[in-house]
Length: 314
Ligand SMILES: NC(=O)c1ccc[n+]([C@@H]2O[C@H](COP(=O)([O-])OP(=O)(O)OC[C@H]3O[C@@H](n4cnc5c(N)ncnc54)[C@H](OP(=O)(O)O)[C@@H]3O)[C@@H](O)[C@H]2O)c1
Image 1 (tube, rainbow, N blue to C red):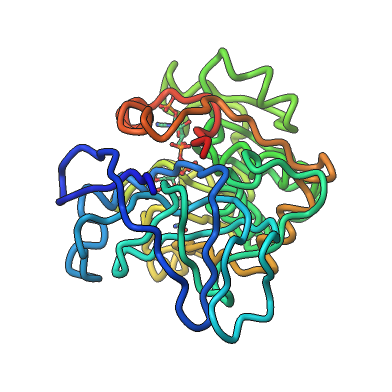
Image 2: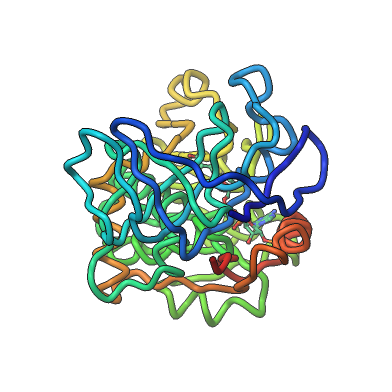
């Protein structure tokens, strides 16, 4: 079966032919139909998990995907052959990832059944980005009318967060380049800040001199978040997906700060899938590529300026 693998840290991904894996006890094998790309997929190439887990090269790339169960191991009751499933498949220590025609996964892992009406492409785009947005918006506990900044709204997590926060009644301030402004308003943003025209924090402060209630920061890294966090009113909430915050220091300033890590539980996957299948969460697929086109697509995605998710057709 064909897969996109990395053979070392820091190298280009490449197409490979690997043996079809056999499911062990408690595992299923999924014939993947689509895989979704996320920044963490290439952070792994750069060594994000180096020293944390073994990398038995070649390691298949990718986390998110959707497909059909084609074999089940002993003791599996939750899934049967033919079920449509989606979720997160990355297990670097076992060399497993979703950019492959066939992938093994534990039946009790980060997987859920696909509801009727959800395409494989959309399902593959959901597990990391939309679950993160869903859980982050829940963690922000937004009051109706709360001013909520999504810093990085033009990306995969951000576009879902804008929709979910607007549905929760927040006044959403979204960052994005000018050509995405109409799209972000259509998704529910009340205001769009063009981060390419000047610092986001200055633009938001001008529009909201009394401060904002909450921010989901998808952009700042450690040590970078002060200008964005400085926009918060006393009692405000900051969430970072990139470990940018010092929660104790924020607490001393009367703010709640959380370095947020999503958890693609079957329940969270089911919730975002139901929203997407019901048309209440829209996923923009910017680019749909074949396995052979993945190395080029990874290079393009690394360079930025995507306008939605990249999905791999399998
Ligand atoms: N902790 C977790 O559990 C978790 C989960 C999911 C994601 N993440 C992380 O969260 C981040 C966002 O993920 P994603 O999937 O949404 O990534 P993405 O699809 O690449 O989106 C990032 C977006 O941020 C925009 N951007 C870049 N610089 C910006 C700036 N200075 N101001 C405002 N926007 C800016 C990018 O626009 P341009 O490309 O046009 O510059 C892009 O649209 C990534 O670092 C990812 O690894 C963490």
